[in-house]
Structure formats: C-alpha cells, structure tokens
Length: 308
Image 1: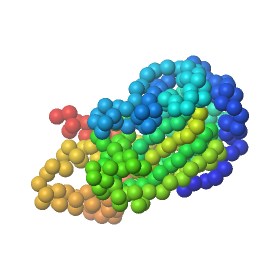
Image 2 (image 1 turned 90 degrees about the vertical axis):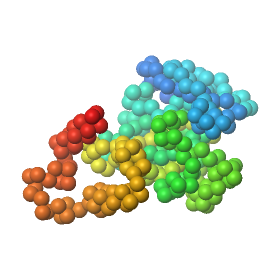
Image 3 (image 1 turned 135 degrees about the horizontal axis):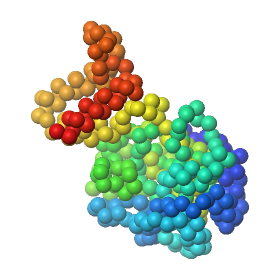
Image 4 (image 1 turned 45 degrees about the horizontal axis):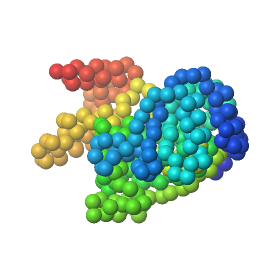
C-alpha cells in the first residue's frame, strides 16, 4: 500500500527540496560522531548489493567510517556521469542521528518500533523479506519498490539463508533481465510483481514476509523506516524455528514428515486453546497461553536440548 504525501511536512522531507549540500548540512546538525557501517560498489556491479557472479562473494565492499565522511563522498560523486555507490544501510536513527526521530516522527500505534535510516546515492537491493511489518518513508530522492507475494518464495530462487549480503536472504534473479533458462520459474513470479515509484514525503507499507526489491535514484537518497511486530516482545523469531525445522524435520523420511505436518498443524498453525481443555490448566505448559514467564521456560528447555 502506497500513501502519497504521508510525511510531506517532516522537516527532513522539506530540507530535501534544497540542494544536496544544504541537505547534508541539515542531517549533520544531528550527528555526534558515532561510527557507521558503510558499503561501496562499482558501476560495473549495477550498484547492486548481491553476490558476485552468482557465487558467495559479495559484489560490494564494506567498511567502518563516520557519517560525515560518507556524506562527503556522496557529495563528491553527485556530478559524476556513472558514479560508484556509497551507502549506509539500516542504522538506528537514535544511534547515528539523535533527535532526528523526534523531529520527524510518525505514530503507528506501536510502543516500540525499530526506527532505522538508510542513506546513499543510487543503489539496488534485490528482492528480500523482513519478518516484521514495515512502513518506509522516502525523505529524499526517488525510490522504486517492487513487491512479490510471500508464496513466490518457490519462484524467486533465493540464495543462502545464512551467508547473506546484508542480513536477509535475497533472490538471485535480475528481475529486469532474468535468465529464464537458469531461473525458469521466475516467469510466474514476474507476472505477480507489483512496482511503485515513491517521491519525498511518500510512504509504503510492506507486510511481513512480502518480498521487495528497493531501488534508489539520484545523488542523495534518504529513507526512514519503522519495523514492528504486533506480538509481545518475549515471542521468538520465526526464522529460528525455520532453521531448527530444517535441521530436525526436513530430511526425515516422507511418511514421517507427513505425520509431523499433522503435529505442526495441531500445535502451531491450527492452534486453539480449547483443544487442550482436557489438560489441567496448571500443567498446560507450552500448550497454554504464552506469557513472559512461560517463554523463558520454553527457551531454557530449547537451549538445554540444543546443547546436548
């Protein structure tokens, strides 16, 4: 869902209408000198943050630096015909630019969203997903978002789950020039992709697990996003459950996996508290209503079992 002009009154968005140098000065008013992780890639890579030659080498380099030096580099690159990429990925706003979030705030009716800022020139981040819900606000430059439904995981040819370019698994397909001999099933995903271009002040809501490619255009792009989960903080990360299931369930004999599907349906996906009324409430354990105390017990049990 795209919402045009949602944060057009933010001071940061208004500052984006000035020249790049003035916008940089506005940003640095909040900066206190903390170091950040920056990324660089060459024009030959298409300014894409992915793997080199479809193997496990990254197509970019990363280094620790300061935000003022990164912005200085971006300013130096702005008039080049085919510039390399200088980019700071997801970074806590309160860490790197304390006070900016207070002056540029949006109420999402959640007590503790993770608020991040992204700064760079022209970049391409291939299709990936996030576990939390996500609302992204374009503050400077132009962005193009291309979304694919969660069920297209089977057609997106996702790279490694562990060794990722920047934290999340990514699709290995070039969505504009797909090699359909190598990635034939992408044809189906391509038909289901939806794209939207956003300008400063616009926002987009990206639900949990929706695949999205993000492209930025122009000399200085700034994005702020909020991630949140509408569940208590003591709940675990579903990705951990996926990895453990790969370890313990995936390679079982087929007939056993069929039986485990029934178990997962009963205890997880079709869970209803009333199905366990036959168990006295004081010994419900993991089948009861999960609170912080029960979550700690389940974690302790899992850690003990995993460490055997």
